[in-house]
Image (cartoon, rainbow, N blue to C red; front, top):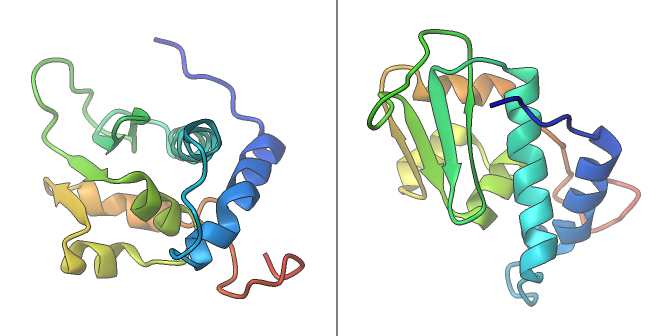
Length: 136
């Protein structure tokens, strides 16, 4: 399957659209379309900047992508998997949460010897912890 081309401006706009919610979990959860655009865009951007098939990143129900150079996996469960929920993924993708912190907290499942390599490709769209739109 061919990888979809990612428009960096669209991905950034989608992330900025959910940025306040990422900074303040007390705010209402964004709509499914808005949330999905940010999750899919950042995951596909990761796959575009770290092409390969050795690690699968899953953010159900929105997206699963393969990334990081290495052996291609074709059958059954891949040996290197990172899985999390949409909010946690976006916190990782924006740099508001560190990968190792997320794994230690149990909000990211990282299995396989190469799963942690995605940390080197994060953040994808850096945001500041401040609420100031000019800071993000």
